Length: 355
Image (cartoon, rainbow, N blue to C red; front, side, top):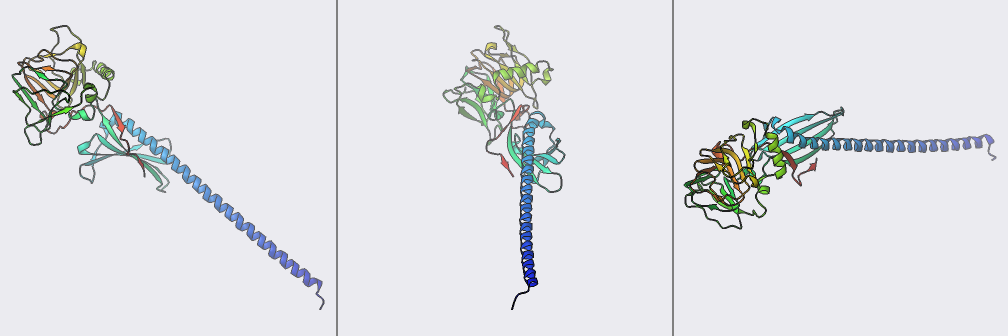
């Protein structure tokens, strides 16, 4: 039978409509896919941008913590944490980014309170709880090296010469089975103690002193120490922490002052040009007495007491003297080290992490 032209037109129209609908759906699907891809990419970019901002903010906070510990560690309020012997302190930092909050959490073991863990956390303040945190251990450094914070009562790069009336050397936990080191001496020198020396159950330890004693004892250079001492000269004697003996002529180097205290020990430095001192009878010094030169003549006639440490970069003449060299613990049995102001803090290698 012949096909009606109208029927053929109807079939062609239906096919066209179907093709149009198919193309429209395909275009719609492609458009939605592209839009979804763009949305995902925008979210990825936004998250990366936030992660970068938060990371940089956390790094900045960690750097600020170093500055804060160097200048205001004494202002931290420590609270006992749940763990044994652990204390924490929290500090919220002000920033110029209102959409980010930043905080520092300091923690330390009370037995090692110069080693501080710092956690710097930066988070969004929109309630999403998206955050970046960085942690780092920092070691607080004073005028003394970490090793020298527990100096024995006597450090000598030479020998004790002549015979004293008495010489008592009391280490930490003296006269107990836990007594510490009484004397550091040079490992290359074989010296014997005078028979009248009493080290109160302590021990003798030899260390390498080939490069002198300054770098073993102090964390700063001689020039830096001189600057600290010069800054202290304008203070009242009871507030001075760093002392330098002035160069003097023969017979005029008698030391009569009694600087320092149990809670504020001092560094008393006798440079080589000042020569070896003669301490007047009854002198009591709290802190570290560092004598740069050899002492061929007796340094005291009677009753010299140093609560801290006597450091001599050479032989020490102790003829006819009565001396007491005591660990700082003798002044306060709770003290285990010579406590000086913090000068700086240094990162401990290998302790940084991102969480």
